[in-house]
Amino acid sequence: MIIPKDNGYHRNFQGHDRFDVPEPIYRVTGGNGGESYLIIGSEKTALLDCGMACWSRELISNIHEKLDPLGRPLDCVLMSHTHYDHIGALPYIIDEWPEVKACGAAKALQVFGSEIARQTMRELGDNASDLYGVDFGPVKTDGLRVDIVMKDGDEIDLGDLKAVFYEAKGHTDCSASYMIEPMKVLFLSESIGQYQGPGKMDVSVLKSFDQSLEAAERMRKLGANRIVSMHYGFIPEYYNDRYFEEYIKEAGWERELINKCIKKGLSDQEISDIHDIFYWEEDLRQAHPYDAYHMNTMITIKLVRKETEEENGKL
Image 1 (cartoon, rainbow, N blue to C red):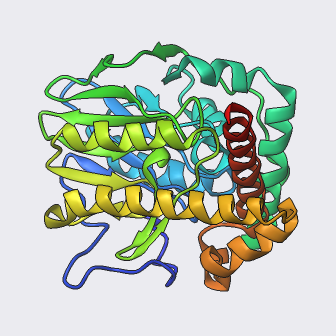
Image 2: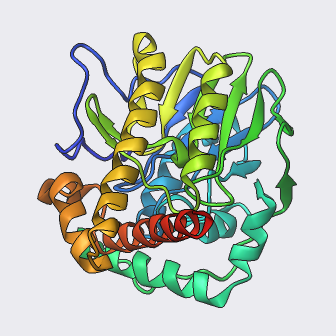
């Protein structure tokens, strides 16, 4: 199996392996970016997120290694959201398993139908190939699709297991968490953080801080046995509640930091430079390209600026 090594940026809990995955869930991540997990039910199989396009060959190889001895196909893909580092490999998965069903939020249909969105995915995907030195060729987005539109509480039946879809907006309008029942393993939407390890939480709110905080509270109340951050891996069970506390605290802190800068009259770029001091580390390039990080930061700044202007308009 081709499994990427720990890039050295993420912080690990003492005595805990974040890639120690409970069967019948398997980590099949092809490379840097978002994680990918294969879930093998008694009747159906599901892939949760696909990762970047440039790692699709490794991802597909890892999936075959698990499914071929069982004589099983890949039946469905569960999308956490439509960003290139989570669904970039979807067209290549569909090429390999044409009958696979892509499952995601209704908003994903609109995103995939936007040429501007697809162009952004291609550009960021190509940049990632260059950054990681992968000889991959131009990234394609043709074939991106949603076969099963999921609504809050909908279930994908895998036989002895089921994947329950929960809307969890804030990062994007198509962001979702998935609970694997009856194991009660919760794969968190990125609206509840891009975790880098204990004491290191990246917030990455691009649409709504209020929605992200609501999602965090709601996901905490689900009472999962295990929680998974899609850029990190499995969180120790004893840390479940602390994870949500960390996120809520960090989201409030980042929002206030940007808000204070806005009130001082700083430009978006000046605020981004200050944001880099607190949130960017050069080692992070191995997990997250700077171009993508900077683009997200500018979106977050504009979001808070809009919130501030609306608040001032009410005074």
